[in-house]
Length: 416
Image (tube, rainbow, N blue to C red; front, side, top):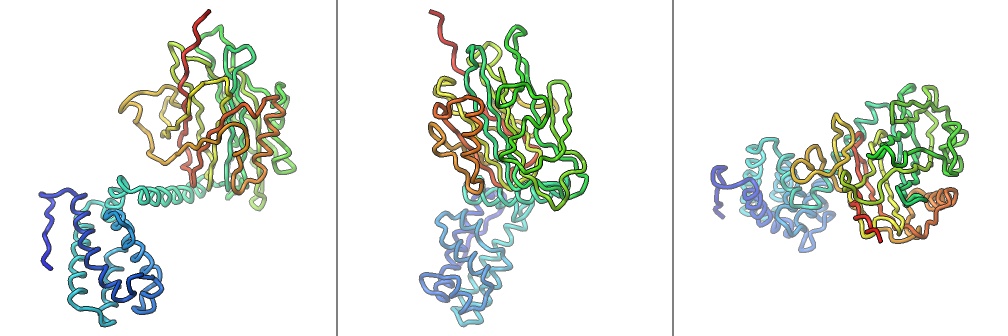
């Protein structure tokens, strides 16, 4: 069947992609059906044509996709398609159909060759309109970053889970927070690689006369030692040696250079109260409050939970931005338009509603998490049943990227 050419000057890459996709599907489907029947099972293709199992699986999966661009994203490379078609010719399947399919594959190859960046650029363009393509591309890229960063920094961990709960302070003038962070199977890959455990930056309120932020243990006491911040019940025993560093309003806790050894993965859980950490209502200077996380540890999974007291931020559902940290540090103001999108990463960070209380906080693979959260609330004297929860879960989160949770502040109630 004669085909229309698609010169670059006359069509966009997207239009060429769609046209080539429709052409390839039309030519490949009869060949697959002739070899494997209407069901088009990969195992039948392998048996009848002797092609590789992964090639057969990818081809049949692509042909099941309804969207042309999804089909193109899943389709094997031209080299694999030529192997399949030649195997079909060898098996005695319609020669004219196979010849037409080879010509279509040639147009696919031409499209790849004429696109700067080749197949990778085409896949990136497809991912803009294909959720599956975007998810697969993102996961592959993040997994590569995880492996590279683990090697470069010399350590990694299996998972990081965090809980950040906020409620009005006793005097109602500010907001207190409960902060729990757990690192699971933290492991050095090089003997003396420096490993930071967690950092806290306390920002004073905009008005000097306001309540000043401070750190306390979960029991509401000033810490006498860095180990007072760790929950021994949910950490490796014994705890390793730590070092503490203070730089202005930033406090950082790190492992000593001698522990842990390479064959001793650690699970470390910290818990603390942060007094006067947020504003309860909108002010002339602040329209949104925020909680920032800068991920230092390469890890396979991160789960971050936020719990908001029922008497705080009524109607507010937090949302998330991901930023490459700028020289000025964390983003503390939400800017509109392009300004707000500068240095952001378009990563999938869905926020799930956990409902009221702690009934839905279980995390697959972290069996002690619900118990740990309830234990921390009880020590702090907070009523866990009065908090609504939100969660985001990321696989292979990108290290050294700033995740910021934003809370839109309500107007202060009118004075009676």
